[in-house]
Length: 304
Length: 304
Image (cartoon, rainbow over all chains, first blue to last red; front, side, top):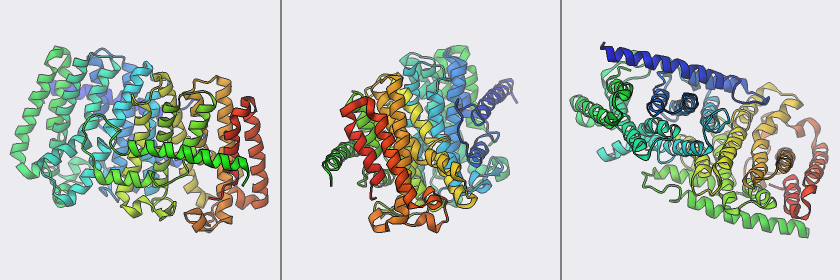
């Protein structure tokens, strides 16, 4: 392991601890000031779906893109937690029997397996709702203009033209055999939109210039493409134990992926190109961007 | 039919037309400025779940509470549409096989029947996300402070301590036999929270005084209780055709309701009391509140 990789993994781990602690508070008693009736089994299902030792990659990107541009760490942490709640909602719903029908997630039973289907649907719904609650809440100390911008950007990343729309197209893809352009588009929506938001949100939190914001957004797009390509590659080259979820599912489902179309060698070359592009986009920020460059490298070459 | 009822129904119908037209635009091509890839079947499922001739009671309350306090009609219309999207998401998910398992809604096949389960889940997810998009978007011409307040209030009304939490408790109620206090609490969360938001949102949109806002909020709570009581009453006194959905379901499921505990006569007396309380809460607003008083009357005595 290179020194850079080592430093990056250490930072990722430290950031994950911060995020974990924020999420634990939010999913405990910190969310509301007033007394509310808590449906405890629903809260338990939400905790199962969120507090499961994820890498917290999206939160890491929110935190580091904010830090790069000199924004406040406290606000970034809350936005990072909101994004992770939203990401985990999507995993809970994607795993449902009528969607991808997965029993395992990060080596643990999925929420509908550990609880039941109705509770899993509601846990996802509540986490999605909570993401907007967290950003809008007074505890997120940002001007209202920035909160509104973050909420709008997050809703668009998650909605019809983003993640949920991409998942709908992806479910169709098993039967409709989309062409290359359609695959790229659906992946940019399904996976890319949230990663792009993660990077762009730092620019919003830090009130960055439009140029810097645009640069971070394009960086997010590049690593979004890399993330999905690495995912497709892992699906054919890894096994379920290493992944902590079912491997070989796409091939078994006859799902069209870029790796299935062009092969693993092509995919590895593309990944190198995307890492180069990501590095180039960060050049204007100089040395301070080293950690985000390492993140791009990590995303392209990760092993699970 | 009394003159007042006639006038009220006319207003309700006119407001519903305005809301319908806003929702139709939002669920067509008006939501985003930039070109996006639209998953057409998902959009069709969203339209099926929203553009189905509902009474648009919650939007009506947003619009009339805003008008009462002199707030802008355009902004109110967008908040009303956002709330209706969120309400319809909850109906789509509640109807799912793993939840209430309903085949009919307003006399039409439910979304998972007309499409499929995965599409219904995603249509609900996307409508929930869209609710926050609509309020945060630049087209909603309100100061950012008010947008943030609306988003926070809506997220809390819809989340763990509100609608979704109430639905979770309600699903448990079929097996846990809750006492009267627990029934009242779960209904206040499941049904009451959104109706309260509908009334309170007018005060936020109009930048009303804290006193006026509090009064509208309490009015919303009173009609929330009345709405649920009337619903439980209809479940035992009406038939499926009149309701446009399955009747007698609660009794068949052995679900504890206040009507099951205390009988229909008691429920009718309670409803009269709630209408009186609603009227009393609106006294400070004088003649201008006549339409909201008629709304309370309508909610308590509706036939479907």
